[in-house]
Length: 218
Ligand code: AMP
Image (cartoon, rainbow, N blue to C red; front, top):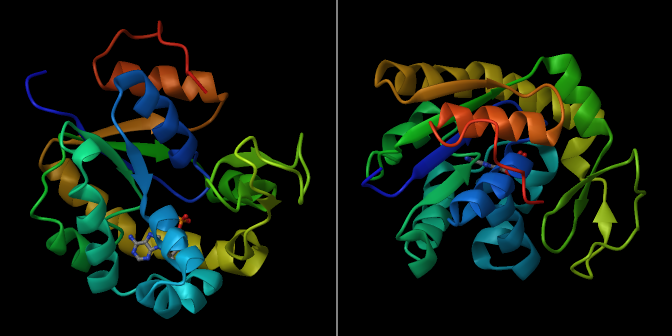
């Protein structure tokens, strides 16, 4: 492939975009970043943008496109993103899709999962409050330490009411964007069911790379 990978990962919340983005990032040696984590970083830093978006994040509502684009442009201009990147959680609606025309992806990987499975996963999900690493309540509990020194929390928006709102936004606003990318021949649909390794193998195969032979390095 002669041009850098510019990958967008899409799919409902809980489909494993963040985890898979980290795996593929290590396999391809390109950075991955999620819009949600970039925004949570702003909140943690208590930046002017962070202060504006904090209540929206807690409620599971989308933040204004202009603010999301500002945060994203800044991340994409960093030197480590010049040879490719994986972006997850953006664009999520038509306004963001239009605002993102300055960057055409090489592939849009869509992780497919039912709402019931997504809800079940999210309600058991723990997130490191420092690095954003994802864990499950199957083997960890709230308050445990992350390997980075951070603490595992059950995000406010991973609770029942916010989850259904976030999935509703996905169906209403994000799916039409996937159709737009599909018309450009960029979409690769992958089942998000199964183990992290199984999903990773499917993504690697969908990208036309060493199908079935790449161990997910996380
Ligand atoms: P996520 O970590 O992807 O579940 O996102 C967490 C929260 O960040 C969302 O519920 C929104 O409040 C905000 N957010 C993430 N991505 C976007 C986006 N593309 N546009 C607007 N808000 C976003």
